[in-house]
Image (tube, rainbow, N blue to C red; front, top):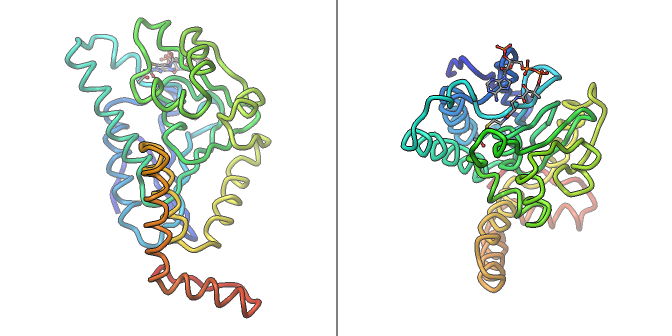
Length: 261
Ligand code: CAA
């Protein structure tokens, strides 16, 4: 198993939990963190026993307070582009991970932290969660996908308001605008996130992975291309044992036992 300096990766009962672990810096994303997240994602992708990935930050104050401003401060234009490209590559890898992903958002999710949550499939927030894209106050723009994923999730008008003002959004408002799927008590965050992961795990892995692929790829296509892709993924699943098991179990009035084949 790989050793990490800036994060922990725990695996139990089909769930991997990736925790960004730089609490003194409010889990800010340095180049090293991004490189380690990339390696950890490869480890999760290859692990056939892992069915859901949870992404969180250590402590209760911050999920991730953004890209590491102290590290970015002296960068020139070329280095800035390279850093943004690294973050975008790693977050795209997260977005396209084979398994479904859930961000468990504890406290500040600002800048790159908001963007990390946006790259996950589902976001559950503690009552103290605060989202924001404060980059314009630093003389830059969001650089790890915020200008692209935020408008796709909450709509262009709301995303422009959040990015132009740099204002923070509390958990209840984040839920109202669709940035959070659910808000829970601070002390229940990981337990509630695991409960959702367990619900996902009960279903056919190939069905869940096929749904993720169809939604993610379909969102990049015209509706007609997306519907054609859906029919292709739908049809391919009829060649699997899990489809036979799922439908047989329904007819026999018992729980399905999926084997991922
Ligand atoms: N980068 C580097 N260090 C950070 C950091 C960041 N993004 N966020 C917090 N820290 C550090 C602080 O500098 C401080 O370190 P020192 O003790 O050495 O001074 C430590 O974490 C604790 O933070 P604060 O003392 O500031 O804690 P606070 O409770 O007073 O404030 C906060 C909390 C409101 C989150 C504040 O820390 C803050 O505003 N952080 C920066 C948020 C931000 O601007 N994020 C966007 C970064 S740019 C980006 O992400 C670009 C992109 O899209 C890729």
